[in-house]
Length: 501
RNA sequence: GGCGACGUGGCCAAGUGGUUAAGGCGGCGGUCUGCAAAACCGCUAUUCACCGGUUCGAAUCCGGUCGUCGCCUCCA
Image 1 (tube, rainbow, N blue to C red):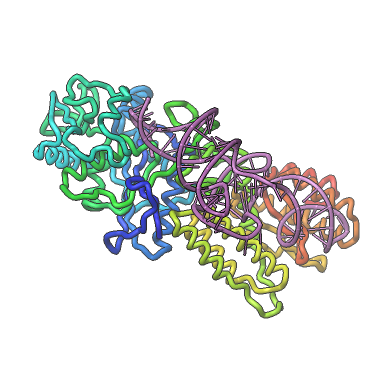
Image 2 (cartoon, chains in turn brown, yellow):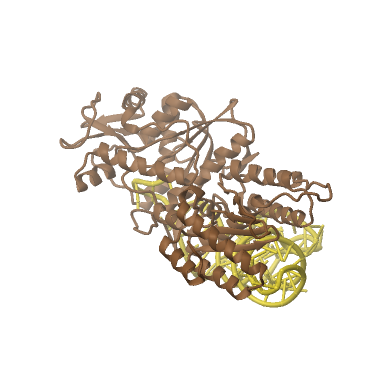
């Protein structure tokens, strides 16, 4: 298995140093709702984590929550709540979104505010070794002493100075020195430290938490491409010089950023789409397919067209697993092994999910072909499900067929409650609605039997207008709810057709 | 200014030296169907931004041009 390492800018053979992969991914600063860029990033690392497990690795996955920083303080003051309340609210919102997206929980979500002792320990250690210095209640990292500073972002101090965009803090020895501990103002949340009341700087909590929970060397450290500098660069400086152990991280993985139009999606630019908004309109499966159909290191331009395309793809996948296995067929069974192998090969090559998806769609086609030809597809379907659900984290709910009745001599399979774009679980459809729809469906079955095509088509069209599609198959009619209609609308339709409720 | 990434069919997107350039969405034609839908079949890039070069051979390597984006400041 090969992964692209930002540090070497090369694909490298993935060799974790223990029997457990230690993985750390930068989490959120909970001061606002997530946008689709966050969704993209966490879906990607979710798939990476899932694939590692699928591959047979044990994974210990830690993700931080930076629940104290300038933005949290600013926002909390703005709306008049405590920083704790604000962070709590948006941390919950984050988990809500992750659950919607079917993102598996990390093993641990340490909070910055709960790790102050470890943070102080690391800062003190750095001071003791001469890598940091306190001034007026704050502590700064002394970048100049680090020979290999810039190795991750592939830049050096001189070229950074040439950019001339670095603030020259009066207190700092060098403009590139960064804050480890920030002296607090009287009205700000603060913690006691050897340097006075204050709070952690931005980068230090990740070093402290990863060292505490995963040890001196991580196998994987992930995050958005925008974190390479300064965040991850500074983490390396802090961690390696505190522990004296190199490397701090074996493999640095960075995902490309979500873009809106031609620009990067970010809170500061205001160019963003809230994740909740996207997920109100599109299913988690559609979102995941959208994200995974481009390579994780490439930027991804968010668009409704893209989501629509993904939605269409989900529908195909959904139908494959919802097919009945042909019975009384030729006794042959479709062998999905070659597709399984190709899928693994794609994922082994730096998590090439677009390629893996292509394999899945190929498997979808041959499965449908086989099903049409009366060849057994149950093995293919289970391979298909395992790859799409376990590895890609798709939900792919099976369209369920419920035997409604056989009153008219034709097997009626009603129900089916899922739509590819947006999921409506069966249990969310009221029985009063279901019974009316079944009634209408049975009436239509009768019409079809009596060759009253016009009336049958009319029922189908009217139901379609109400968000319910009917598909006639050899074994019956499959009903799919794309939205839940009102009882009145169904009553009036039944009235028009002269059907007693 | 420094560093980096990218430019593949109508849209999205794999492929990075050698079979007919994956896959999805969309479109067109067909099979099936009472008609649809779904599924399946066929067609939809002689060509990979442009110009040169290396090579027996390049979308893939090198040089240049144009265009887009990212980081260098908070950011997944």
